[in-house]
Length: 107
Image (cartoon, rainbow, N blue to C red; front, side):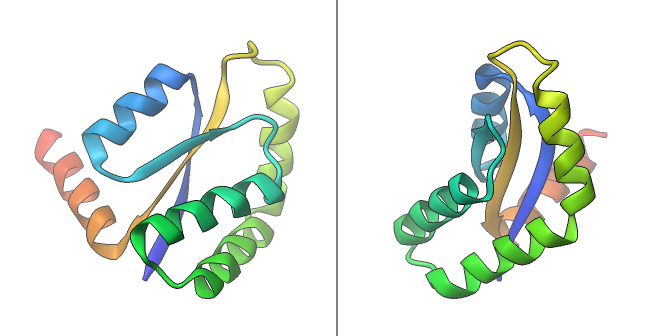
């Protein structure tokens, strides 16, 4: 199973660092729109040989589930400098387990 998580706001350096530290697929979105999120997740699915349809369904479900928060992020992006994006991560269950385990070891 593949999971999507919105980390919050960051710049490209933050995004790159997060991807390097976690091994997850990380992208920044500005503007934050569903079509861009779906295109990115489809690219990742092809790259990882994941099934595209279930992944796309999960992304749409997450988008709808977090609708209120996403609208807040969309409004907040307008007040941030142009280099700030909303950063999201995508990975398999094992990828996320490794990420969270590493976070616990650091703490």
